[in-house]
Length: 148
Image (cartoon, rainbow, N blue to C red; front, side, top):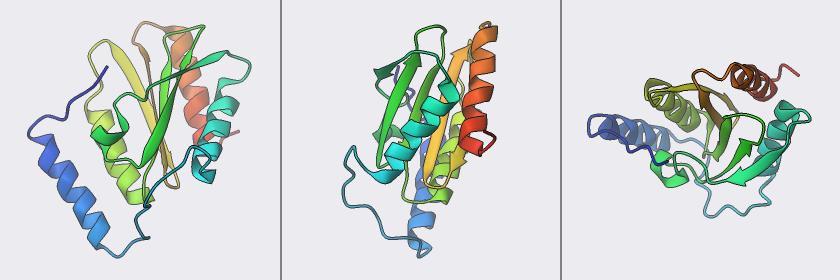
């Protein structure tokens, strides 16, 4: 499901990303391959947060380009409604801006949770009535936050 940025949110997100880019931060990534160490770290954190639950690959939601990320991947839990997306940004600040936007725009009927770990953002959702999903979200966010 693609979550479009509202017209009022787009300028704010764009301005924040531009300010971050002009602030003299780390150089922009020219291209990211699936074996990028940050993406591999993100995959390991998702696996850790999933425990023994089975996961299947899915497209990140929202799409990588909709958040201004460099790359990303998604995973869905086969035992619940949980769906997680991991995004790679140029730096922590860009990831934080995207996290704030996602938290302010959780689709109706879903529970959303996210956190930033370096240049990675994990964003996960579950049906609002899925109590098992709520516990999975907590474990996943704890894994990314370093609460192993």
